[in-house]
Image (cartoon, rainbow, N blue to C red; front, side, top):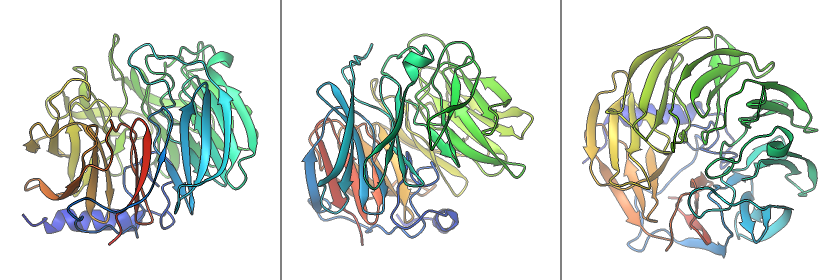
Length: 412
């Protein structure tokens, strides 16, 4: 089936609008935290029968943190023994350029993963990591020298949660904004990028596993964040909360998908566990639901991708199959098509295509099309379980499972 022209054209325009440097994937979900690679990223239209060529492979420790890639440095964050380790790798060879570590005693309340969950963030030559026990650290990208470190869980009396800290910090200009989940007014805390000093702390919101995003509202940058039980908009300079609405529920549930900005004045948040999704119209003063419910979409941690007025996402849960790949009309929430029993995982976009990294380690190259699923290629480059988000940078696809990191050549 051939891709529809509107869908392909819209994604091309979206990619062209992204200001990221060629080949950079500097944080969770890419340059703009929307799952879309840099505008000039190019991918092959298909793969050989055995899958893309592996440029290098190496063993890694525990954790579900994806890689950040800036220039020829790929930043890996994982656990080795009783240490959380941040490493800068040569993106072309996988060899370690520098590494730094700190001790950890973390043990999850649920599941067996005891490594870090948050993807590193690289901004202005600084690498920010947020470990499972809430250790927030800054390292020099070039040398690995530690600039500062804060034990946020201990300092702000924050519980570790089911799986440890999992909300990847947002770096805006000179501040690092974190859903710490501390007691009192330390639910959300801003730290100085250069020194680690506390700039402000606000709200009693518990921590989620969802990464906050930057959004322009009336010409001013704001932060859109999903916490344990709320969705809110705040001013990054002061921490003042403009509005919030309830999202999530108590009990053994998590909010983990990143909020999606749908144009200038709409947002989408989604979660599983019977919660579903909310599409809301918003401005600086309020947010009002446009459509909502469990039926359109209820994703455990896969962040939907917006292409040509349609949302594509894996609907369901990793731990409770089945999971379906769905296409939903963004304006109305109407289901356009559903590929049943597709399997759970995550999606990223580049060059008018999606890379779907499924938890069973199958990787599927897909072209988005509201007329139906268009599969271009499949492969299974790793033997284990893949939960870390993939990264696409300079024609390379970075994937990791429980024990192995691989770099695949996916350039044309």
